[in-house]
Amino acid sequence: MKLFRLTCVASAAAVLAACGGSDGPDRGELLDPAAIVTTLTVAQIDAATAQSGLQAVSGPAKCDVKVVALNYATIGAKGEDGANSSGVMLVPAGSDPACSGAAPLVAYARGTNALKTRTLANPQDGETASLIAFFAAQGYAVVATDYLGYAKSTYTYHPYQDAASEGSAVIDSVRAAGNAASAVGAKLSGKVMFTGYSQGGHSSAAAQRAAEDKDKIKDFSVVGGAHLAGPYNLGTALSLPTPTAGSQLFLPFIITAWQHAYGNIYGKASDAFQPPYDGFIETAFPSTDVAGLYAQLRMDLPAASALNLILQPAFVEGVRAKGNNPLYQAGLKNSFIGWTPKAPVLLCGGSGDPVVPPAVHQNVLMADFTARNVTNVTSVDVDAQVQAAFAPGGVAPTDPATPEFATYYSNYHSPYEPMFCYAAARQFFDSVR
Image 1 (spheres, rainbow, N blue to C red):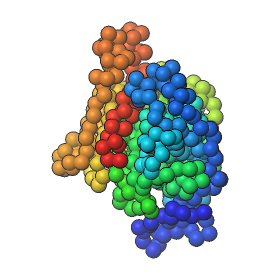
Image 2: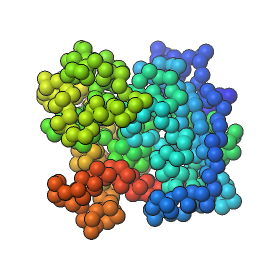
Image 3: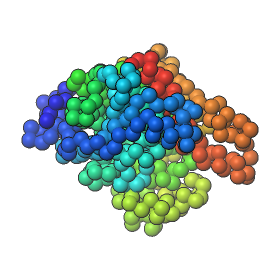
Image 4: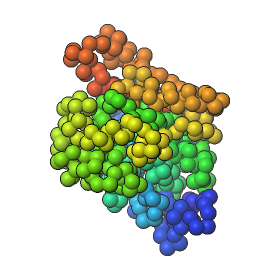
């Protein structure tokens, strides 16, 4: 049933690629009937958040929440038809007035994950549990994509950090939620808010930009975006002399994904990767054996040491030289410097984040907004809250040789930082809902 069709802004030559062919499903059309996986009661949600400690930040639940599995049509990294993505819709329910009226829709994009079979249509998933606690149990409807290449998606790879396909997967999840609403008892107000964490912060910004500029969503209006700990400045990040924590996962994932999507990052795998990585890395992401993948990528080593084993030195030198280097140029293409959002935006992160440092991403993007007199953006630093809750004695450890330092910074980006940014996002959304 094609209820929420694409309002397409495209040239005649691009209509089929951008809008879907006449014989195929429309973008956001449900490929399987929306299926209610379970309904969580207020008591169940509160018991879970009390046990995890999340309730101190999220607050107690107001609403029961229906967990709905989705499988919907979308487009591929080159705009081609025939792609699909799965995901989850979270529907508030109950007698509280916050739960029974028409709800705004939060469209969420998840963080980096290497497990191919992972789906957010799982109430035990950590990100799904957070979305339930912070948004759905507070009266927001939520839809969250699994992205291309994961779970039920038959796409042959995941176009990691490709802004165009991330944005289309999120936007089409909004259409899917609209198509599923009546069948699962959801009442939607027509207001949509984009948010996401880590990779998802990049994806949600891409979705807001695309939704405001070209991919109009029938019967929905974009009222805000809260983009959390996202890598918004990829050109600079990829050319840094010192890689950030976890780069032995993120960088090969980006390089191979962009090679699949654009075809010009390298001539052959051995131009970028040392043996034995050149023999398997192009099909390594996402994986059904994450423990094995992490062992291959030497996640036990500092990022710089691991990348010295994985990447060809000449390839690294080329990226750091910037100029016309294809990876650097692709990083610029997938950055948000120069973007002017139409709806209000919140940027959130913690200044101590070693994985997606705000000094490289959030602060630079905010400085760009300020320099161009973009006045509808607010930037929040939750580092003080992270320190107060998780640092020994409420002060971030400073000695890298101590176990406290390793524990604190290995957990900073997740699970410490997200909860405070989710809370900031909900407060922001409350002001525009």
